[in-house]
Amino acid sequence: MFHRRRTLTLLVLVALAAVFSRAGAGATPQDQFAEAERLFAEKSYRPAIEAFGAIFHDPSWPEITRAKALLRMAEANERIQQWDEAIRLLTDHESSVKIPIWHGRLLALRGSVALTMPTYYYEKDGVRTRGRWVQGGDYHHDEEANVVAALRDLEAAVVQLRPIVAGMGVVESDADRTTAEISSRAALQYAQALEAFRNSHGGFKNGIEPSDELVAAHEKFGVGRQLGTDPQAGYRIAEELAVATGLRANAALSRYLQAMYCGRLLEVVSGGVTVLPPDGDGPPMPKRGQVDPTDPDRTIWVALPESMNPFAIMKSLWRDYPGTDVEDDGYLAYANLAARYERYVEAERVASELLDRFPRSFWRSDAEALLQEIRFPMLQIEDPRPALPGEKVALSVSTRNVSKLRFQVWKFDLGGVLESRSYLRDDDANFAALAEIVKKSSQVGDRIGRPDQSFVRETPDRGEHRFREMEVPLDLRGQRLPHRG
Image: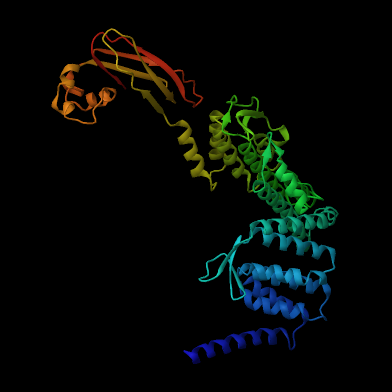
């Protein structure tokens, strides 16, 4: 086993030596960098780290190339889940990256790693292992510190890259396109980090007004001093940068994520109280009630402004960015949101449009399932209270997607049921459950003959896919068992 390990070690060293010899003797600097890039593209991340490290630590290389190598080393460490090492590299050598565009990209990468890496780690013998359990290790949870670090870096990255990208115009080179995409993504992640920070620091009061706790946390950690603390603004900046550089797909994604954020915002302020809005193109924003945290018996009625209306923002996505990859995502998200707030006719229309317009959409099965749920017929009938002969009896009926109901009434021998051994010997029997007992008795069904009454009632259903309630009076002269069909 020892010899086998030594052989494997020698093979790895020989392979690395071959890499450097191939990029060294007789090779140009461009060849050496290209070889490192090849290793990265092939997902040979550890050899790539070595190759880029050799470039970065060699002061004879141009500053811009060394900056590229540093970021590639950090990216490779992130890919092999060495997140803390990636952050350490970028932090220790940040001062060596003086070119503004590359310093902005460094900040964006470090902020992205801090935001997306696992929020816990185990430490044992001075070694930190993140994202998985280590026997005998000390557990640490650092989500807040990571989000705060991400906010600072992402905000600084956007501030630094925004004027550079805005001056590019429509990008043509791959390098400019990459920088534009990085800046737009940094703005998106800044918005996501702001939302995560808000949710863990008190959220809102009085609708969408930041809570006192959240305002104090923003001040304590210095959050949003340059770009503000509104997540929606981050999504708009991301779209602005994408539009300025002609990245239409990125702009569409930013608009889509902005709509999804506003959909979550609507849910946050809901408090579980809904005033049903009309279907179609009527008032697009349902009023929502939020329970006052200081007085649970008081409801605060709020309405999101049109600029935060997720329905309107999603419609603008279809209008401004047709043909983009997220267009069908937007249709499904809109349909789900409309159904969530009981705008079923609108949800049905949009889900049907998705199926018609996007025959190969990944979301077809989801749209079909939503349509089935919206159109599924449902019937609920409360058993009436026991009544003496001659008393009026009414059934409370609730229907959805049912236009007509047929009722049948049979006479039966109540005394025979109550005197039966199965009823008298049942310790759990009670008069309130008499209907269920009768249904199970031998008198029900074909053995009791033709119904004494049979009639049809139309329901209040008008095709809006909502539950409608009705009272159905029964003329019961004697002892009868009602049946609905």
